[in-house]
Length: 468
Image (tube, rainbow, N blue to C red; front, side, top):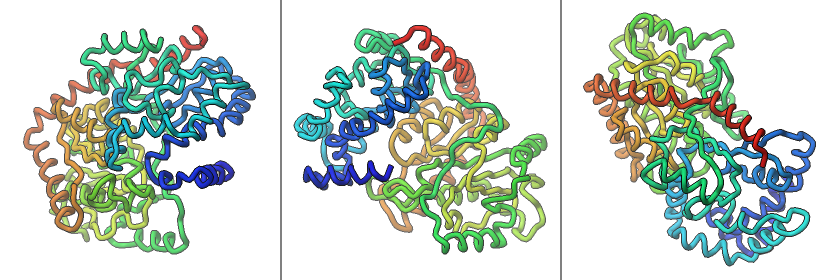
């Protein structure tokens, strides 16, 4: 890994394109060079493993796709955004933030000498790849052409949404199916979310580096009085699912706040201290405003913080917050006794026990969007970047919930206004509870029949049977 990073920097310096390295535009120069550098090792690894089929993400791991083509192994992409039509919207957002257009990006890709050299090598022995594999643009981004990737996808593709929630190229699924089959020879299968078995471990947010000072600060914060019932890293004997089940058995509402793994991470633009693509409040301010706004709306402080009431004994709504790994995750937020905050939570397992009387406050990521829909829970969506605003708009259109746009200004006034907007949205959901609950149950019914893991397994078996 480190060697590759050093080579990347040397390539950048040698070709005098360092001005693009911290820019999205550098991908037009380097994507195919990266692919060329990683291809030998990936091929060797696949030769040793001898898989029957390769499953990969076509957005971030096209190397697996190209290596499979070289070796003649069946390969199936799993698209974890709402279909290939979503690429246009995502790419445009990143490009426009740099003051350029997709046409500018495409032009840079086509005239880059480094890129031309890489493609020439990839299309020569020992790989002998078809130049059509690269005509749509850099491997990850196809510059808005329809459809992406040409004939590189194999015979089947899996998309973790349902057809009615996809980001479309055309209005009807029939037109889109015909487009992909005629031009790419691929059948896309919309299977909905793959939730796994209850209790399965799943990826969580991360923090890049823990300093000794941060570790001490974390210990000090978890000892604060208002954290005594919400230690971010409790002992291994905690039964969070049991607490949720107990709350539901007593007729209590459950409100789940989970804003994803990016906004609580160390990523420069979109993480804890980042402002997104444009001027806005930071990730930290956004997360804390959402939690504060939910607490404001629920009126959870009718019991003193000194009371002995525990989160699982209160008669008020049970609030569960996933706040990430940052040491200042909650700062000065005073959590009510009937709430639980954790660095990470078993989100899917909690949602399995929630219903249309409850509320899920999330960021509009594809997984959370589908998981909340599968559970039939009304939502308040607080999108931050990428496909999240689009997903939020879909849920609003379906009347499953409401969306709060990320502020386009920074400072205390923007933070306060955002917190109030979240609080108002939560109140609006409960004022019109019957309508939102009905819409959520309807979406649940549609997603429940989409197939999930069982459909994915059948697609993989079919791909093995059909071959390349």
